[in-house]
Image 1: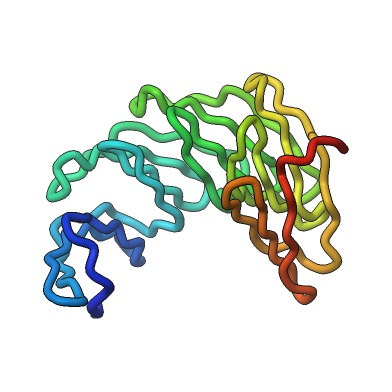
Image 2: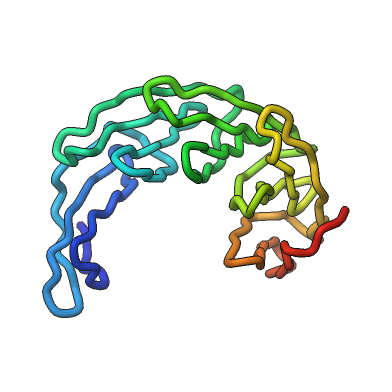
Length: 199
């Protein structure tokens, strides 16, 4: 059952709910909204990002593009397979940055959603999860290296641009402005200034 959520007038939410992805419009009423499913994408679905009229969803080793311009009838338009399970991805412009477990970071051209293609890749030491993209850097979490920076200015040959070893098991990283916030189990939260250049 879907519960009321904070009002966000005029928005459409994509909810990843196994075994499908629900597309629900919102109808503001006071401090809550009414959620009603109007469309769905077959699952299971693990991660989702939206860019324009397209939703990009991952399931195990697959990244799939869906045209959601008509939310009631999403259309599958393209897909790409990875050698390892996708642990997360981010979209910026017409690029997707995918963290795929032991295969590392992959930069995907999504300018034509019907023909997704790999532009370049970078292997980290362990299991890779994409955190964010900051300027010409991809910010990753690697369970062996900790927080990892990758120079993506040359998309064909991304290169390592430094790392910081976290004391335990690196879990996640997000960015806000020039700051990165990385979590580690069991140590806690680390805060980094991404504007500082150097190894």
